[in-house]
Image 1 (tube, one colour):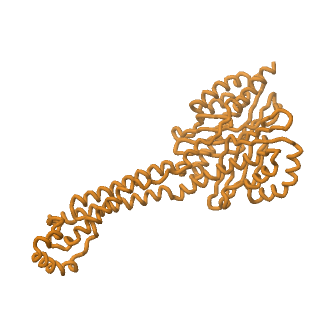
Image 2 (image 1 turned 45 degrees about the vertical axis):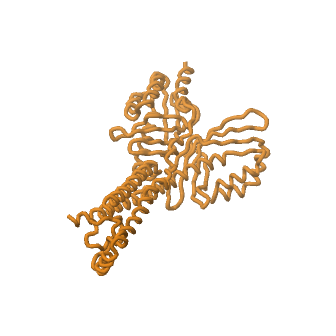
Image 3 (image 1 turned 90 degrees about the vertical axis):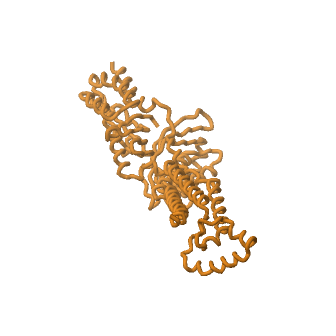
Length: 168
Length: 273
Protein backbone atom coordinates (compact mmCIF):
# COMPACT_ATOMS: atom_id res chain seq x y z
CA UNK A 1 0.00 0.00 0.00
CA UNK A 2 2.81 2.37 0.88
CA UNK A 3 4.63 1.42 -2.30
CA UNK A 4 1.57 2.24 -4.38
CA UNK A 5 1.23 5.61 -2.67
CA UNK A 6 4.87 6.35 -3.15
CA UNK A 7 5.08 5.45 -6.82
CA UNK A 8 1.60 6.25 -8.15
CA UNK A 9 2.38 9.95 -8.52
CA UNK A 10 5.71 9.62 -10.32
CA UNK A 11 4.29 6.87 -12.54
CA UNK A 12 1.33 9.07 -13.51
CA UNK A 13 3.67 11.95 -14.22
CA UNK A 14 5.86 9.64 -16.28
CA UNK A 15 2.87 8.43 -18.30
CA UNK A 16 1.71 12.01 -18.85
CA UNK A 17 5.21 12.95 -19.98
CA UNK A 18 5.21 10.04 -22.44
CA UNK A 19 1.86 11.24 -23.80
CA UNK A 20 3.30 14.73 -24.12
CA UNK A 21 6.32 13.40 -25.99
CA UNK A 22 4.07 11.49 -28.37
CA UNK A 23 1.87 14.57 -28.88
CA UNK A 24 4.94 16.67 -29.57
CA UNK A 25 6.18 14.18 -32.12
CA UNK A 26 2.75 14.06 -33.74
CA UNK A 27 2.62 17.86 -33.88
CA UNK A 28 6.06 18.06 -35.42
CA UNK A 29 5.13 15.36 -37.93
CA UNK A 30 1.95 17.19 -38.98
CA UNK A 31 3.97 20.21 -39.99
CA UNK A 32 7.05 18.52 -41.34
CA UNK A 33 5.96 15.41 -43.22
CA UNK A 34 7.53 15.01 -46.66
CA UNK A 35 3.99 14.92 -48.10
CA UNK A 36 3.18 18.32 -46.61
CA UNK A 37 6.44 19.65 -47.97
CA UNK A 38 5.73 18.35 -51.48
CA UNK A 39 2.23 19.75 -51.30
CA UNK A 40 3.56 23.13 -50.27
CA UNK A 41 6.12 22.99 -53.06
CA UNK A 42 3.36 22.17 -55.57
CA UNK A 43 1.23 25.09 -54.38
CA UNK A 44 4.21 27.43 -54.62
CA UNK A 45 4.97 26.24 -58.16
CA UNK A 46 1.39 26.83 -59.29
CA UNK A 47 1.05 30.30 -57.79
CA UNK A 48 4.47 31.33 -59.13
CA UNK A 49 3.52 29.94 -62.55
CA UNK A 50 0.29 31.96 -62.60
CA UNK A 51 2.03 35.17 -61.63
CA UNK A 52 4.84 34.76 -64.12
CA UNK A 53 2.67 33.77 -67.05
CA UNK A 54 0.62 36.91 -66.35
CA UNK A 55 3.83 38.97 -66.15
CA UNK A 56 5.08 37.64 -69.49
CA UNK A 57 1.77 38.63 -71.07
CA UNK A 58 1.91 42.16 -69.69
CA UNK A 59 3.68 45.25 -70.93
CA UNK A 60 3.22 48.94 -70.34
CA UNK A 61 4.52 50.57 -73.49
CA UNK A 62 5.29 53.74 -71.55
CA UNK A 63 7.60 51.81 -69.22
CA UNK A 64 9.28 49.32 -71.47
CA UNK A 65 12.45 48.90 -69.42
CA UNK A 66 10.56 48.07 -66.26
CA UNK A 67 8.41 45.64 -68.25
CA UNK A 68 11.41 43.91 -69.77
CA UNK A 69 13.03 43.64 -66.35
CA UNK A 70 9.88 41.90 -65.10
CA UNK A 71 10.06 39.46 -67.98
CA UNK A 72 13.62 38.60 -67.01
CA UNK A 73 12.69 38.30 -63.33
CA UNK A 74 9.89 35.87 -64.15
CA UNK A 75 12.12 33.54 -66.14
CA UNK A 76 15.18 31.36 -65.76
CA UNK A 77 17.22 29.00 -67.92
CA UNK A 78 16.51 28.88 -71.66
CA UNK A 79 13.55 31.30 -71.55
CA UNK A 80 15.58 33.82 -69.58
CA UNK A 81 18.48 33.57 -72.05
CA UNK A 82 16.14 33.97 -75.00
CA UNK A 83 14.40 37.00 -73.49
CA UNK A 84 17.75 38.57 -72.74
CA UNK A 85 18.99 37.94 -76.29
CA UNK A 86 15.82 39.39 -77.80
CA UNK A 87 15.41 42.32 -75.43
CA UNK A 88 16.60 44.98 -77.88
CA UNK A 89 14.26 43.65 -80.54
CA UNK A 90 11.34 43.34 -78.13
CA UNK A 91 11.89 46.84 -76.95
CA UNK A 92 11.76 48.21 -80.46
CA UNK A 93 8.66 46.20 -81.31
CA UNK A 94 6.80 47.39 -78.21
CA UNK A 95 7.71 51.01 -78.83
CA UNK A 96 6.48 50.74 -82.41
CA UNK A 97 3.22 49.01 -81.52
CA UNK A 98 2.40 51.57 -78.81
CA UNK A 99 0.06 49.07 -77.27
CA UNK A 100 -0.07 48.11 -73.63
CA UNK A 101 -1.02 44.59 -72.63
CA UNK A 102 -2.32 43.35 -69.34
CA UNK A 103 -2.47 39.61 -68.97
CA UNK A 104 -4.42 37.84 -66.27
CA UNK A 105 -4.55 34.11 -65.73
CA UNK A 106 -8.18 32.99 -65.49
CA UNK A 107 -7.33 29.36 -64.70
CA UNK A 108 -4.17 27.35 -64.27
CA UNK A 109 -3.16 23.86 -63.22
CA UNK A 110 0.02 21.87 -62.85
CA UNK A 111 0.22 18.91 -65.18
CA UNK A 112 3.54 17.56 -63.90
CA UNK A 113 5.62 17.93 -60.76
CA UNK A 114 9.01 16.48 -59.98
CA UNK A 115 9.86 17.83 -56.56
CA UNK A 116 13.25 16.12 -56.42
CA UNK A 117 14.40 17.52 -59.75
CA UNK A 118 12.66 20.83 -58.99
CA UNK A 119 10.73 20.94 -62.26
CA UNK A 120 7.05 21.29 -63.10
CA UNK A 121 4.73 21.86 -66.04
CA UNK A 122 1.78 24.22 -65.83
CA UNK A 123 -1.11 24.98 -68.17
CA UNK A 124 -2.90 28.30 -68.05
CA UNK A 125 -5.83 30.05 -69.63
CA UNK A 126 -4.96 33.73 -70.10
CA UNK A 127 -7.04 36.80 -70.86
CA UNK A 128 -5.03 39.65 -72.35
CA UNK A 129 -6.43 43.16 -72.41
CA UNK A 130 -4.77 45.12 -75.18
CA UNK A 131 -4.89 48.90 -74.99
CA UNK A 132 -3.50 50.75 -78.00
CA UNK A 133 -2.42 54.33 -77.51
CA UNK A 134 -5.10 55.33 -80.00
CA UNK A 135 -8.15 53.19 -80.51
CA UNK A 136 -10.41 50.89 -78.60
CA UNK A 137 -9.09 48.24 -76.23
CA UNK A 138 -9.62 44.60 -77.06
CA UNK A 139 -9.46 41.29 -75.25
CA UNK A 140 -7.55 38.25 -76.41
CA UNK A 141 -7.69 34.72 -75.02
CA UNK A 142 -4.75 32.38 -75.07
CA UNK A 143 -3.86 28.96 -73.74
CA UNK A 144 -0.35 28.32 -72.58
CA UNK A 145 1.85 25.52 -71.44
CA UNK A 146 4.90 26.49 -69.43
CA UNK A 147 7.85 24.76 -67.84
CA UNK A 148 8.86 25.73 -64.32
CA UNK A 149 12.11 25.28 -62.48
CA UNK A 150 12.93 25.78 -58.82
CA UNK A 151 15.56 28.46 -58.27
CA UNK A 152 16.94 30.04 -55.10
CA UNK A 153 14.56 32.91 -55.86
CA UNK A 154 11.52 30.62 -56.12
CA UNK A 155 9.87 28.82 -59.03
CA UNK A 156 10.45 30.49 -62.40
CA UNK A 157 9.48 29.84 -66.00
CA UNK A 158 11.91 27.99 -68.25
CA UNK A 159 9.59 27.89 -71.24
CA UNK A 160 6.31 29.38 -72.38
CA UNK A 161 4.43 27.97 -75.34
CA UNK A 162 1.01 28.97 -76.64
CA UNK A 163 -1.32 26.08 -77.41
CA UNK A 164 -3.47 27.33 -80.29
CA UNK A 165 -6.59 25.47 -81.35
CA UNK A 166 -5.65 22.48 -83.45
CA UNK A 167 -2.14 22.25 -82.04
CA UNK A 168 -0.91 18.77 -81.32
CA UNK B 1 -33.07 26.42 -93.95
CA UNK B 2 -29.48 25.89 -93.09
CA UNK B 3 -29.14 29.10 -91.20
CA UNK B 4 -31.28 28.09 -88.26
CA UNK B 5 -29.40 24.83 -87.97
CA UNK B 6 -26.11 26.64 -88.02
CA UNK B 7 -27.28 28.99 -85.35
CA UNK B 8 -28.42 26.18 -83.15
CA UNK B 9 -25.29 24.18 -83.62
CA UNK B 10 -22.97 27.11 -83.08
CA UNK B 11 -25.07 28.02 -80.12
CA UNK B 12 -24.42 24.66 -78.54
CA UNK B 13 -20.73 24.79 -78.98
CA UNK B 14 -20.23 28.40 -78.15
CA UNK B 15 -22.46 28.26 -75.11
CA UNK B 16 -20.12 25.81 -73.49
CA UNK B 17 -17.35 28.24 -74.08
CA UNK B 18 -19.09 31.33 -72.84
CA UNK B 19 -22.09 30.59 -70.66
CA UNK B 20 -20.30 31.52 -67.49
CA UNK B 21 -17.99 34.43 -66.81
CA UNK B 22 -14.45 33.17 -66.27
CA UNK B 23 -13.56 32.61 -62.70
CA UNK B 24 -10.07 32.31 -61.32
CA UNK B 25 -9.72 28.72 -60.23
CA UNK B 26 -7.79 29.43 -57.13
CA UNK B 27 -10.29 28.38 -54.50
CA UNK B 28 -8.02 25.71 -53.22
CA UNK B 29 -5.39 28.21 -52.20
CA UNK B 30 -7.16 28.34 -48.87
CA UNK B 31 -5.27 25.22 -47.96
CA UNK B 32 -1.82 26.51 -48.66
CA UNK B 33 -1.12 28.38 -45.48
CA UNK B 34 -0.38 26.21 -42.50
CA UNK B 35 -1.84 27.17 -39.17
CA UNK B 36 0.23 29.02 -36.69
CA UNK B 37 1.70 26.66 -34.14
CA UNK B 38 0.46 26.92 -30.60
CA UNK B 39 1.31 30.25 -29.04
CA UNK B 40 3.32 30.50 -25.86
CA UNK B 41 0.12 31.11 -23.91
CA UNK B 42 -0.77 27.44 -24.01
CA UNK B 43 2.48 26.51 -22.39
CA UNK B 44 2.47 29.09 -19.65
CA UNK B 45 0.38 26.86 -17.52
CA UNK B 46 2.82 24.04 -17.94
CA UNK B 47 5.77 26.24 -17.09
CA UNK B 48 4.03 27.39 -13.96
CA UNK B 49 3.37 23.84 -12.99
CA UNK B 50 6.99 22.96 -13.53
CA UNK B 51 8.14 25.85 -11.37
CA UNK B 52 5.73 24.72 -8.72
CA UNK B 53 7.04 21.21 -9.01
CA UNK B 54 10.59 22.38 -8.47
CA UNK B 55 9.58 24.34 -5.42
CA UNK B 56 7.91 21.26 -3.98
CA UNK B 57 10.90 19.17 -4.79
CA UNK B 58 13.22 21.54 -2.97
CA UNK B 59 10.98 21.84 0.02
CA UNK B 60 10.53 18.14 0.24
CA UNK B 61 14.08 17.12 -0.54
CA UNK B 62 15.04 15.92 2.91
CA UNK B 63 11.99 13.69 2.96
CA UNK B 64 13.09 11.82 -0.09
CA UNK B 65 15.51 9.84 1.92
CA UNK B 66 13.39 9.49 5.04
CA UNK B 67 12.12 6.11 6.07
CA UNK B 68 8.41 6.77 5.47
CA UNK B 69 8.44 9.94 3.43
CA UNK B 70 4.88 10.00 2.17
CA UNK B 71 3.40 9.89 5.64
CA UNK B 72 5.36 12.82 6.99
CA UNK B 73 4.08 16.37 6.88
CA UNK B 74 5.90 18.32 4.19
CA UNK B 75 7.28 21.13 6.37
CA UNK B 76 8.35 18.92 9.23
CA UNK B 77 12.12 18.87 8.62
CA UNK B 78 12.34 22.65 8.53
CA UNK B 79 10.34 23.15 11.64
CA UNK B 80 11.98 20.36 13.56
CA UNK B 81 15.31 22.07 14.30
CA UNK B 82 13.58 25.04 15.84
CA UNK B 83 11.41 23.09 18.18
CA UNK B 84 13.59 20.11 19.06
CA UNK B 85 17.18 20.50 17.93
CA UNK B 86 18.37 17.32 19.58
CA UNK B 87 15.84 15.13 17.83
CA UNK B 88 16.65 16.78 14.55
CA UNK B 89 20.36 16.04 14.80
CA UNK B 90 19.58 12.45 15.64
CA UNK B 91 17.37 12.20 12.62
CA UNK B 92 20.09 13.68 10.44
CA UNK B 93 22.63 11.20 11.65
CA UNK B 94 20.30 8.30 11.15
CA UNK B 95 19.40 9.49 7.68
CA UNK B 96 22.90 9.93 6.32
CA UNK B 97 23.64 6.46 4.88
CA UNK B 98 20.18 6.07 3.38
CA UNK B 99 20.69 8.02 0.11
CA UNK B 100 23.22 5.52 -1.17
CA UNK B 101 20.95 2.58 -0.61
CA UNK B 102 17.98 3.92 -2.55
CA UNK B 103 17.54 4.52 -6.19
CA UNK B 104 17.02 8.27 -6.25
CA UNK B 105 13.69 9.25 -7.76
CA UNK B 106 13.47 12.11 -10.19
CA UNK B 107 12.85 15.47 -8.56
CA UNK B 108 9.08 15.40 -8.61
CA UNK B 109 6.66 16.94 -6.14
CA UNK B 110 6.08 14.70 -3.21
CA UNK B 111 2.62 15.66 -2.15
CA UNK B 112 0.11 13.30 -3.78
CA UNK B 113 -2.16 16.17 -4.79
CA UNK B 114 0.72 18.13 -6.32
CA UNK B 115 1.81 15.06 -8.26
CA UNK B 116 -1.68 14.54 -9.58
CA UNK B 117 -1.92 18.18 -10.59
CA UNK B 118 1.40 18.03 -12.38
CA UNK B 119 0.42 14.85 -14.22
CA UNK B 120 -2.88 16.43 -15.21
CA UNK B 121 -1.19 19.59 -16.46
CA UNK B 122 1.27 17.59 -18.55
CA UNK B 123 -1.56 15.48 -19.93
CA UNK B 124 -3.55 18.61 -20.73
CA UNK B 125 -0.60 20.09 -22.60
CA UNK B 126 -0.35 16.84 -24.56
CA UNK B 127 -4.03 16.99 -25.49
CA UNK B 128 -3.69 20.61 -26.61
CA UNK B 129 -0.73 19.63 -28.79
CA UNK B 130 -2.63 16.70 -30.26
CA UNK B 131 -5.60 18.89 -31.13
CA UNK B 132 -3.25 21.40 -32.74
CA UNK B 133 -1.57 18.62 -34.69
CA UNK B 134 -4.96 17.46 -35.92
CA UNK B 135 -5.87 20.96 -37.06
CA UNK B 136 -2.53 21.36 -38.76
CA UNK B 137 -3.05 18.08 -40.57
CA UNK B 138 -6.45 19.25 -41.80
CA UNK B 139 -5.04 22.46 -43.23
CA UNK B 140 -1.85 20.85 -44.48
CA UNK B 141 -1.14 21.21 -48.21
CA UNK B 142 -0.94 17.42 -48.29
CA UNK B 143 -4.74 17.27 -47.90
CA UNK B 144 -4.88 18.12 -51.60
CA UNK B 145 -3.67 14.89 -53.25
CA UNK B 146 -3.25 16.41 -56.73
CA UNK B 147 0.13 15.30 -58.09
CA UNK B 148 1.12 13.88 -54.70
CA UNK B 149 -0.86 10.71 -55.32
CA UNK B 150 0.16 9.99 -58.89
CA UNK B 151 -2.13 6.99 -59.40
CA UNK B 152 -5.24 8.83 -58.20
CA UNK B 153 -4.31 11.92 -60.22
CA UNK B 154 -3.95 9.84 -63.39
CA UNK B 155 -7.24 8.03 -62.71
CA UNK B 156 -9.30 11.20 -62.41
CA UNK B 157 -7.48 12.81 -65.36
CA UNK B 158 -8.30 9.81 -67.57
CA UNK B 159 -11.90 9.49 -66.41
CA UNK B 160 -12.72 13.16 -66.91
CA UNK B 161 -10.88 13.34 -70.24
CA UNK B 162 -12.74 10.29 -71.50
CA UNK B 163 -16.08 11.67 -70.27
CA UNK B 164 -15.60 15.04 -71.98
CA UNK B 165 -14.55 13.40 -75.24
CA UNK B 166 -17.70 11.29 -75.24
CA UNK B 167 -20.26 13.92 -74.28
CA UNK B 168 -18.88 16.53 -76.66
CA UNK B 169 -18.67 14.23 -79.68
CA UNK B 170 -21.64 13.15 -81.73
CA UNK B 171 -22.58 11.98 -85.17
CA UNK B 172 -25.99 12.49 -86.83
CA UNK B 173 -26.80 8.80 -86.67
CA UNK B 174 -25.78 8.28 -83.10
CA UNK B 175 -26.89 11.14 -80.88
CA UNK B 176 -28.46 8.52 -78.64
CA UNK B 177 -25.02 7.11 -77.77
CA UNK B 178 -23.85 10.58 -76.81
CA UNK B 179 -26.90 11.05 -74.67
CA UNK B 180 -26.34 7.72 -72.96
CA UNK B 181 -22.73 8.67 -72.29
CA UNK B 182 -23.89 11.95 -70.78
CA UNK B 183 -26.31 10.18 -68.49
CA UNK B 184 -23.46 7.95 -67.35
CA UNK B 185 -20.80 10.56 -66.67
CA UNK B 186 -22.70 13.72 -65.75
CA UNK B 187 -24.51 14.55 -62.56
CA UNK B 188 -26.04 17.54 -60.81
CA UNK B 189 -25.78 20.94 -62.40
CA UNK B 190 -23.65 19.72 -65.30
CA UNK B 191 -26.28 17.13 -66.24
CA UNK B 192 -29.06 19.72 -66.25
CA UNK B 193 -27.08 22.18 -68.34
CA UNK B 194 -26.16 19.49 -70.81
CA UNK B 195 -29.73 18.20 -71.22
CA UNK B 196 -30.97 21.69 -72.10
CA UNK B 197 -28.31 22.23 -74.75
CA UNK B 198 -28.27 18.77 -76.21
CA UNK B 199 -32.05 18.82 -76.79
CA UNK B 200 -31.49 21.31 -79.60
CA UNK B 201 -28.55 19.43 -81.06
CA UNK B 202 -30.55 16.20 -81.18
CA UNK B 203 -33.14 17.81 -83.43
CA UNK B 204 -30.70 19.40 -85.83
CA UNK B 205 -27.95 16.81 -86.11
CA UNK B 206 -29.66 14.19 -88.33
CA UNK B 207 -31.24 16.71 -90.75
CA UNK B 208 -28.01 18.56 -91.39
CA UNK B 209 -25.63 15.69 -90.85
CA UNK B 210 -23.81 17.53 -88.08
CA UNK B 211 -20.88 16.00 -86.33
CA UNK B 212 -18.78 17.28 -83.49
CA UNK B 213 -15.48 15.77 -82.48
CA UNK B 214 -13.80 16.80 -79.28
CA UNK B 215 -10.24 16.06 -78.34
CA UNK B 216 -8.58 16.63 -74.98
CA UNK B 217 -5.40 18.66 -75.45
CA UNK B 218 -4.15 19.08 -71.87
CA UNK B 219 -5.51 18.29 -68.41
CA UNK B 220 -4.28 19.48 -65.04
CA UNK B 221 -5.68 18.55 -61.64
CA UNK B 222 -5.75 21.47 -59.20
CA UNK B 223 -7.51 19.82 -56.29
CA UNK B 224 -8.04 16.20 -55.38
CA UNK B 225 -9.49 14.56 -52.31
CA UNK B 226 -10.88 11.07 -51.79
CA UNK B 227 -14.14 11.92 -53.56
CA UNK B 228 -13.86 15.40 -55.10
CA UNK B 229 -11.65 16.80 -57.81
CA UNK B 230 -11.09 20.08 -59.62
CA UNK B 231 -9.51 20.03 -63.06
CA UNK B 232 -8.60 22.41 -65.84
CA UNK B 233 -9.07 20.87 -69.28
CA UNK B 234 -8.09 22.28 -72.67
CA UNK B 235 -10.21 20.94 -75.52
CA UNK B 236 -10.14 21.22 -79.30
CA UNK B 237 -13.45 20.85 -81.08
CA UNK B 238 -14.02 20.21 -84.78
CA UNK B 239 -17.46 20.20 -86.33
CA UNK B 240 -18.60 19.14 -89.80
CA UNK B 241 -21.81 19.76 -91.73
CA UNK B 242 -22.83 17.48 -94.54
CA UNK B 243 -19.42 15.87 -94.32
CA UNK B 244 -17.52 19.12 -94.79
CA UNK B 245 -15.51 20.93 -92.09
CA UNK B 246 -17.60 23.63 -90.54
CA UNK B 247 -15.28 26.50 -89.69
CA UNK B 248 -11.97 26.11 -87.95
CA UNK B 249 -10.96 24.14 -84.90
CA UNK B 250 -12.36 25.75 -81.77
CA UNK B 251 -10.40 25.98 -78.54
CA UNK B 252 -12.26 25.49 -75.27
CA UNK B 253 -11.01 25.72 -71.72
CA UNK B 254 -13.13 24.14 -69.04
CA UNK B 255 -12.94 24.15 -65.26
CA UNK B 256 -14.38 20.83 -64.23
CA UNK B 257 -15.67 19.67 -60.85
CA UNK B 258 -15.91 15.91 -60.48
CA UNK B 259 -17.21 13.72 -57.69
CA UNK B 260 -16.57 10.07 -57.06
CA UNK B 261 -19.93 8.28 -57.01
CA UNK B 262 -20.15 4.52 -56.63
CA UNK B 263 -16.52 4.19 -57.57
CA UNK B 264 -16.80 6.31 -60.74
CA UNK B 265 -15.80 9.90 -61.33
CA UNK B 266 -18.79 11.93 -62.47
CA UNK B 267 -18.71 15.51 -63.69
CA UNK B 268 -20.93 17.70 -61.55
CA UNK B 269 -20.01 21.13 -62.86
CA UNK B 270 -18.54 22.60 -66.02
CA UNK B 271 -17.47 26.19 -66.41
CA UNK B 272 -15.62 27.97 -69.12
CA UNK B 273 -12.25 29.36 -68.02
